[in-house]
Image (cartoon, rainbow, N blue to C red):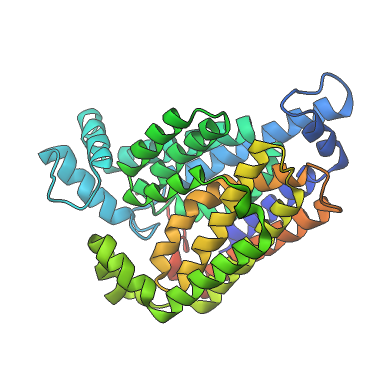
Length: 366
């Protein structure tokens, strides 16, 4: 546990550096870089800290033992099958992921090398995205650690799908809708749930009206609690119906309520910061809208809140970006509060719900 406590303290320090006033200057100049003075030095320091932190996270993920991560051993088992036998269309694993396993299997049959390659794909894709699109890399990295460090140790298929989705999202912001759609389709070849990302095409001003979003969230929550959502999913996507009788069927109301409250705060701040004349900002709030709505589905089956994680990985960059629009007073205090609470929740989850992520006690590959 002391390892994760020390990492969390490090991330708290990272957050404080990211909230320095000269970081505001760098954000105001984004995407241009400062050419002189303290802001230029600050940018170099922030980038250096971000690089070494991401490399450390990659190391912990790539060189972990087989028992670290809920599904690591399962993915290793199937890697051995796909690398030896080839594509098996009878399996529930998506074809894109199977082909990736077959390709890696031609390079190596070592399961540890397999873990290193998968971790490298996810962290390289994430690192490039954060450095290219975040106005404050350290704040985005802090939010990433609180949520996706644990996810990247367990969710291989969806982890890769999420990386594809973030770049599709940026293409959508650039009005390259066809290419964005093609990438969304590609993401579904690694995890079928990525199909929910097509909802981002519904970038209408209607979803910027808070009362509409809150009403939709309440309706989705009621559908989940009443069991109507379960029935609809079983009819539309029967391959997931067995989850309603599995260990994922427990509601976990406390954890789901935390997610909903967090997403509500993020949506509220984003919608207040948005400039309705800026299509990029509108799309960012649309993302926060669906993040909130999908959070309400967690009252049905926890597993289906995973669909909301496609919107969450986008939000860890877009939320800090929106708060730098200067429409939110004391935005640094808001970010300090959000990051601090999430860092505390990360540690509390490890202590009271260690089975959720299987991160503790940490072990290296032997």
